[in-house]
Length: 334
Figure 1 (cartoon, rainbow, N blue to C red):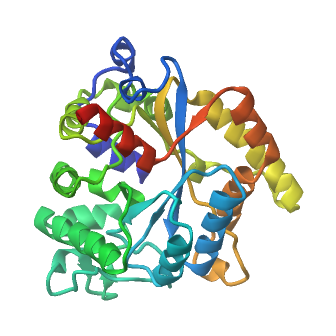
Figure 2: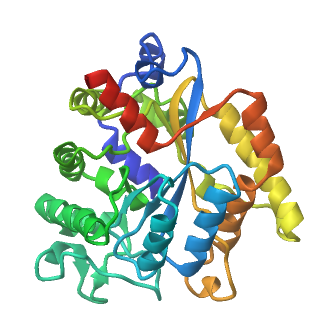
């Protein structure tokens, strides 16, 4: 599914080799030339109690630096209350246009009558797949639901530091992408968009590197509007296949996750990279939501790993947040 999403999104992008001849967005934001600047980002907060606990631990006990919340989901109030007690946590909106699990669903905050194209009539909830949303939803409905999710955050007394996308759905149709970007610009909220050299993104799917697409132009549009832009996106962890021996104990699983995350950080090139994960502390109930518990637990154990923390320190990797990026971008505009 991820290849489908990015294949549609990356309709126009310059080759990474050409991009590397220009200053990275990290450099333009004032970070040292050649620095590897990374956002270690946790998706899916609010999705479940287990996801909340995993995100909290990754952010306070581990090296994760940012998180985003699925506003239509049932465990959002707990996480928002926690954010109010921890106001320096960098937290954005994981814009949610899908309800992918078979037995665990949610609907649009706009209400079904307002956005019928986002509702699967067989469940009364959002569609499970990205393809179904592309087939049935109108871009105006996507924009309406994005705004509803921002409004709910503000009604709860919390201002998101950025916008990103659950399952990449806002990138699955160029018209959806423009709704996403235009709302970010209008609301002055940074949006996740890999508009730079995209070295890791292209390496993950080499066919994408051959597409000339709009990402560079969209990145420039965001930059000119006063918003920060990513140089690259590392979105591989959900596809990692955990070997059987790593599932024998938490110690073995953490050793596996440590190796994977050190390798992931090694892959990050100079510039600003967002590295995505799904930290969860799965309870006995989580398996009734999803079979992804082991992968999500591995992400949490990777963020808690002393060896990963040591690697970041020894290699001089700079961890940042969307809040810091926006603060730096504002200074450049003054």
